[in-house]
Amino acid sequence: MTMRRLTMLGLAFGVMLSAGCRPPFAGARVDALGAAEAVVASDGSSAGAAALVASCAAGNTDFWAAKDRAHELLDEQDPLAADFALAVLEAGRQMESTLETGDANEFAWWTVGRLAYHAGEAKAMAGDYPGAEAVMLAGPRRWQRDSYWRKYADHDALIAVVLVNLGRRTEAIKWLDQRPVLMPPADEVWEMLTGEAR
Image 1 (cartoon, rainbow, N blue to C red):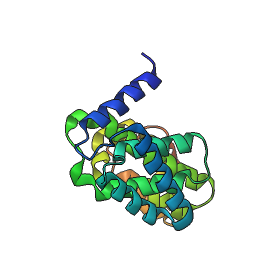
Image 2 (cartoon, one colour; image 1 turned 30 degrees about the vertical axis):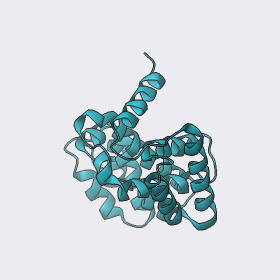
Image 3 (cartoon, rainbow, N blue to C red; image 1 turned 135 degrees about the horizontal axis):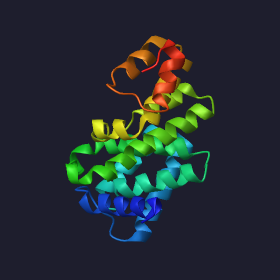
Image 4 (tube, rainbow, N blue to C red; image 1 turned 180 degrees about the horizontal axis):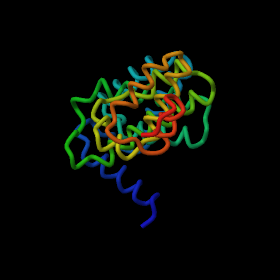
């Protein structure tokens, strides 16, 4: 089975297990997400998050659908993508109590972490390090479990690089030092910062 198919199965599983509201039909979901994108474009991520929370409460969309749309925009390199991702992650944080957080939903939560990573990476690549910091740890706290950090060392590396570019080298080293084991590329960033191997 391909990684793409595994990913799609995981996303579908996440939607099934969500305890949050569900859209009545696909057309309303698309319209609600398009409206939220327009709010982000005109009024910013915070307003977009509020629009998404309201749309979910009205039954027009759900967090998982919004997350999937944010991933699509990032894949398409849409200029709005990282800001929309931040809106989705902030909406998810506000709705976390309505979302399934059990261990059975682990794969779906990893995709939330990957959204924070890819949005942060997009901001960093554009030289917007404050923007990268705002999104790289955003969203429901549920995705930030040890299983995620063990699997995705690139996220630790991104955080350290962003902190260094914000003039916070000591904080970057401290962030990496909290991990018992550093895997590539986080170990490479550690070595560049400290001159020591881990």
